[in-house]
Image 1 (tube, rainbow, N blue to C red):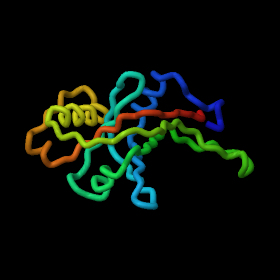
Image 2: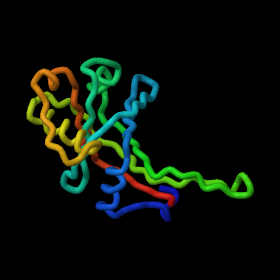
Image 3: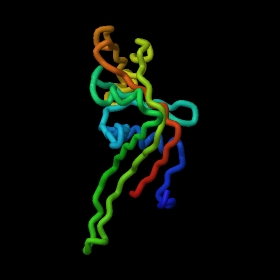
Length: 156
């Protein structure tokens, strides 16, 4: 990381930043081009890292690409604010961001899918015990990204 003065290393603070984000961009490789898709997500702490959960349609480009990926990248950001100045070079942008990579898998087990969907719903609408019918679970693909390495920085 070039700007070490902006690096966030406190794991609990990183998780608070993850929790404040409302979109996660997933980066996949399609032959010779990058394919980046913004997704709703849920998350949970897992050992010294975290898991990210995504829901998706049961078919499409993203799902076609998953079996061809060794690692995928992700990026999420929050706390955006423009800092203006009297000259163009005095402008800056305040933010917090987390980015990294890991292994992406498709969850097929109904219990694991339910757990992941609850984590997604908990992220956006906390405090409720969501339930999902077998029919609704069958109509959605659920992805799990086991984050292997990540970095976080902020400019506030």
